[in-house]
Length: 438
Ligand code: LLP
Image (cartoon, rainbow, N blue to C red):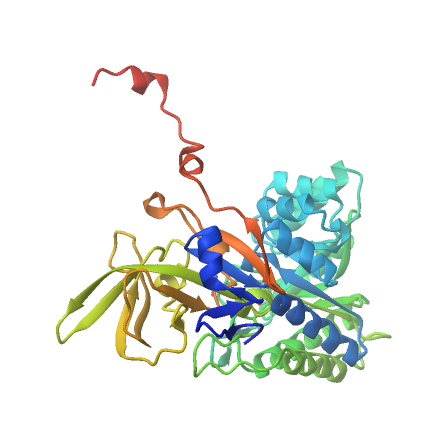
């Protein structure tokens, strides 16, 4: 998919770059991002919204992959940006991302983070709970500023990968519950705060969702709530943010919809359910993360050792693992892989791909069909663009890989590979311990 092909040498090529050349230039493990595909995904969202005729913002959820080059690219593609911490905010600001298009999320923003965001004059805070509501009002007042807010509500729709369930009472750490009246109370309080400008509400129902029903139900619940608010408090929501969660295909059997289908379902539901609330339809915001960068990412590994347990299994170990992709260990996520240096060779054996960390749970893929795998082969794992680099760790003091963007035969580093010096950069040996006789 994307710009990936197999070239005449039988090598995987992404963005016109032969991955064996990328290995020679940057080493492995290596995160490779198909820049054209990322841009295409951004454009699909923008185009789908334009077709709807509604006012909109598409905020890239930077948690999926937050680095400065990605922020710049998102800006160029007309995205807004969702950040959830001072680190993501700092990354965006340092990349020159326009602050007024940044939305600040999170269920426990610190006073320092709020101050930083106020200083930067970001576009909107998504307020998660009553403590934050009062804290934000207080800090905004101290700064003599009026800040835009959305209130995060839990619409009682919980979406899982293949189904959604509708619950009366949502048990979640996020947001104000619509069902038990706390969302109503939050709107009431927010509207009275002189330093808060309530734009509307936000709802996020889950991630890696393949169906539109959950989104439609969320729109309906939020519209019902908006009507109650309108009737009782005379407040009309200008903005309704429906979060992210649009699924992608990791393996056969994953059945995501096209971006345009998700957005059409949402915008149609908005037109249907908000038609009789207020004078005009609200502006619709969404926050896709995974579906912007997920399938544009490939991780390239070098095969090292292997171990065959006759009649049981063959383990093939690569030079990365749960440190660069914790998702299989955390969520039992499934991935597909191919031998990138012999991409045309027929499958010959079933192997399981292990990482190099000191624990048995460090497995990337169980039972994948590959050509006969040898030490030194290159293994490419697909769809690692989202929640891989951003969730990578230094467990076992393994250095985090480099990230390259590839496009039209060019490759550019966007994150350098960590050095051994980086690994100890923040370590200190206190004088007291240094002086201790050995
Ligand atoms: N908006 C909010 C408020 C969110 O909490 C999230 C994801 C998104 C947007 C973006 O969702 P997306 O379009 O990427 O599905 N680490 C997990 C995923 C955690 C998602 C958390 N929130 C994983 O690797 O699958």
